[in-house]
Image (cartoon, rainbow, N blue to C red; front, side, top):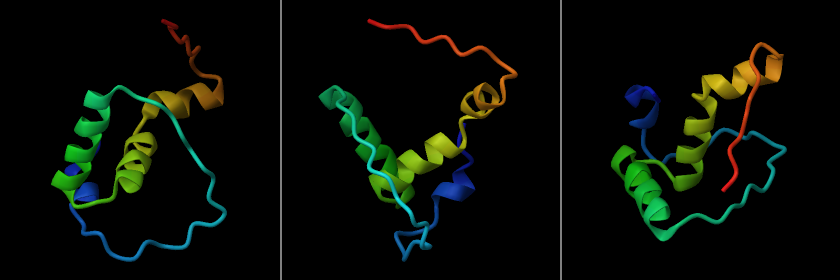
Length: 75
């Protein structure tokens, strides 16, 4: 889970993290609304909210080192 202290800072200027990459995806309307509520509750943009969730994903880090086998289910 993402630590709440990381998410409670305001929507101030962000550090320059160039280069940036575009990340897009389509989700169900309810998921988008939930993400917007989560970001708003923490006072961050939806982009920063997504960054924080990804940064906190320990499985993604472990999969990148070869320590774990990542299996994805497809619909």
